[in-house]
Every structure is written in C-alpha cells, then in structure tokens.
Amino acid sequence: MALATAMVLSGCASNTEAPGDEQKPQTNNGANSVAKPVTIKTVLKDANKDFEQTDIYKEIVKQTGVTFKIESYDPNKFKVQLAGGDLPDIIQVDSSNYKQMIEGNLILPLDELVKTHGKDLMTPTFQPGLDFSRKFWSNGSEKLYFIPSGHVGPSGYGMEQSIGWTIRWDYYKELGYPEIKSEDDMLNVLEQMVKKHPKTTDGKPVYGVTTWNDWGLWGLTMPMAIPYGYLNLSTWSVIPNVSGELIDNYTNPDSPLWKTAGFLYKAKQKGILDPDVFTNKVSDFETKITNGQILFSPMGSGDANTHLAKEGPDKGFMAIPLNFGYVWQGASNPTGWDGRAYAISKNSKNPERAMDLINFLNSEKGSRLMASGIEGVHWEVVNGKPQLKQETLELYTQGGDAWSKIGISGSNNQQGLSKFAPTADGGIVGLFNTPEFFQSRLNPLQKDYVSHYKVTYPAEIFKKYVEEGKLKDQSSFNNAWLSAIAQPDDDMKRLNAQLDDILIKGIPKVVLNANNDGDFAAKKQELIDTLKKAGSDKSFAWWQQAWSDAKTAVGN
Picture 1 (cartoon, rainbow, N blue to C red):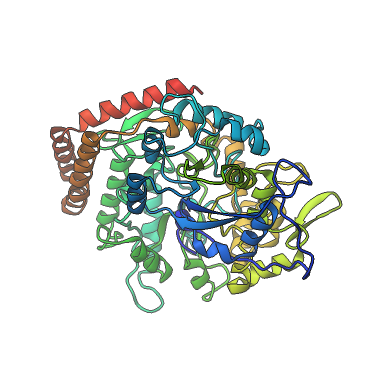
Picture 2 (picture 1 turned 135 degrees about the vertical axis):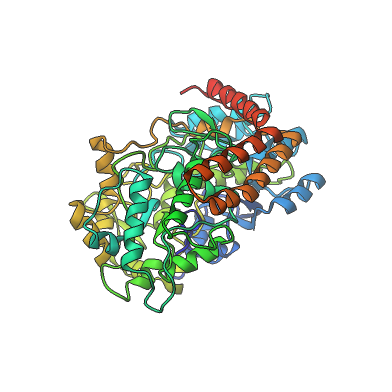
C-alpha cells in the first residue's frame, strides 16, 4: 500500500453474467431505449488503461453501450494535442488547460446536452458545481463547458485516518499513551521511542523524523499544516487555513513551512533526525518506514504494517488523535476534484453518447458500480438494505489478481459522487465505507487501538474528538474557493519557481547548520530576508488578491 495520496487499487474485474444473458445497452435517459454501441476516445486524469480489462469497466460498457478507450493524461503530450487540435471525445485534464481549450474553440458547450442526455447531473447535488462551472470555467461566456466530477457530495471518515500524525502504536503503548498537545510533545514521544529502540531488529539505526523532497515543498509544509488547519493550494508560496485566511507560507515566521523547519531542527538537536532528510525521495521514505527506521509520518505508513505484523499482532503504525488542532476531514466539495471535470471535444462524432457516458459515471448507479461493484454479483439488497456479498468480502481479504480483476475502485476515483453520498436504496455509494464493514475488517493492531480509545473502528476516535470539541475539522472551508482562484501568468510562475528554488536549497542549511536556537532564528531570518529581496512580497500580494477575488465571487 503506497502513501495516502498515492493509494490506488489496481484495475480489475470478472464478468459473472451467465453466457447468453447479455443485455442490450441502454441510454441513461430512456429506461427501455436501445442505444447503438459506439466507441469513443478519452483522456482521463490519473486513469489506468488496465481498467479496460476489468469487470467494472465491462459493466459500464454494457450499461451505456459506450466503449471508451482510455489514455492517461500526460501534460506534455496534451500540449501537443492542444496545439494540433487533435483532442479525443472526452477530455479530463488539469484546470490550467481550460482557458486555452475554450479560446481555441476546441470543446463543446454542454448546456443542451445536459438537458437531453444528463438527467443524473440535473440534481441538487450537482447543481452548485454546474453553476460554478458556468461562472468560473467558461472564460466569461457563462456557458457550461466542464462537468464537475470526482467525489462530489459529503465527505466522511474512512476506516482509518490516514492523513495525520502517524507513529508506532506499540511503542506509544509502551510509553503509556502520553498526551500530545503540541509538536514539542510529539518530539518528546519520538525521542523516548528512539531511546528505547535505537536499532531495528536487523541492526539498522532508528530515527524519529524524516521527510522527502520529490513532491516539491510538500514535505517541508504539510507535516505541520495538517494539525494546524491549513490546506494546500496550487502554489506553496501561500497557504490558506480552514477559515479561508491566506498567509505567506515563505516569509511568515509562524507559517506551516517554518513550523516544519523548526520541527526538523528540534529533531536534529535531539539526535532523532534522519541524516538523509533532505535527499530522500518518497520511495526512500517508504523503504525506511517499512524497515522500521522511521517512527513518524504525516500521512500514512505505506506497507509498514503488513511487514511489522510478522513481528507481533499489535506492532505497527496508527494515526494518533491529538488533543489540539484540526483533523483532515469535512471540507465541502461542490466542484469535485481538480482535474476530474469532463469536457467533450468539438471533434467528437458522438457527443450525445459521450454525454451518456459522463452522465452514467456521475450517476448514483454508476458511482455505486465503480465504488462497490456489480449489483447481484458483488453486492445485493438484503432486508431493504444494500450490503456486500460474502464472496466479495472473501475476495477483498485474499487480494491478488482475483481481486484486481474485479476493478472495484480501479477507475482511480472516476466516479462522480463521493463514496459517502447517500443513495436512494438507503445506503451510500461506497459499501466498503460503512461502520459495519470497518468493524468486520479489524486486524489485531486495529482492535488494540479501538479497545484503548473505546470506539468501534479507528477513525471513529477522530470523529468523536470533533464532536466533543477537542479537535476541529475542515467544515468551514469551501473547496470551491480553490477551484475559482486565478492561475498565475508566466512571470508569476517564474517568480514562484525562483522562490521555491531558494527555499529548497536554503531550508537544509538553516536546519542542519544551526547550532542552537539563537543560531536557528538568525539563519531563518536571513533566509526570509533573501526571499523578500527575491520578490516574495510581490508573489504574496498577487496571490492574496487572487484569493480574495475567488472568495468574493464564490461566497461561503
């Protein structure tokens, strides 16, 4: 299992319909109308072509009559396609491309197609996103060019809280579950762990803290942004908090970036900082946390728990509910995920059928299919309630090729509705996301965890802390603000890239070369002054105005 942001189940699925029982395809706007099968081309954000070999994919084709050839979005290749006007039928790409596609007259306005072939989009759930698209993604035309998609609807708590301060649970238990009310408390806990367990079972040195450098400035910002209530924007130079306030992440001394730098510096002073902290890549981090050398992660633990389970039933990493700050849950999502909105090319010979497919992928039925499997095969309604079949649970447990072949979640989040969106049959879109399912899947480590916190599944303690007021969530934040913010011009992009480079080179010197707190403060201020001389104030002013404009235009 990769880190939380990269966790994707591979495509998969097996069609268990009896031979000769094939159904004729239907359009989504006529229950008994037969649609002629068509083949269209798509470019889809983060999609895997292997999904075409799965049962879920085959079921989508069966129910829509649309065979869609998948090409994964590649920014460089797409630039060539844009320049030549050679676009596939359905386009799902980064929002930075929207303006050029409209100005180049390369995509169709979809208002009429939604009325005739998008009945499942004309609902209260999607209406705010469609209105947003007309206002912010139409290049001032007020037309509908892009269909917002990707987990539209309510957010919810999964089985575990994968985004948060995650540490070795068995070591934490050994220390008597000390309260963690600050980053200093966390460092003290990690220091005690390292003292008690300085070597891995095979003799490698153990460090409390590290990060990675191949996600831009993610690893230098998000470790402290998460518990202090900040969300990442399209740039790291500024960062908004859950209340919608924007701060200068580069020169504000109390920003998440500088809190993270301070965290790393203090870890170095305690002797628990990985010496490779500023040269690691994500793959290095995953290797070190899996082999037991790293005891802290801001976002999941990769395959570490599978590996550690061999050493004992309660050994492994779990996210600790803090007695301060914020939990990474709850932001409203009316506009879906960035890069998941659908457009239809003016080149398409079958725009109506393309809209049929888009409508289905966003519908309750299509979303349930991708998130939970085929009705009657993988789930069924029992006593008026949808639930997973035992055979599906067994395949899920076994994993491997048999599970991958099914394709549940293998579309890489192409379903329009959130997995927690309620459905007409009394369930939710994602049947793998119910408390009952979570409770049935607890392993010994998770059972030990929930027993201590007196809850029924791991993430429930975070939900409980929010309800009790010990933690806050992101419910005051509107993700549409992120979607509405203007994109910088080339000059601002160059300035931001220059500032990023100064920080990437400068932060290691501040952290590693500071001999004491006073020295750290002086080196920190010196780097901040360098950033200001390079134009950080100009960058902040631009983003502040863009952010203010976006919030004003969207509203709350």
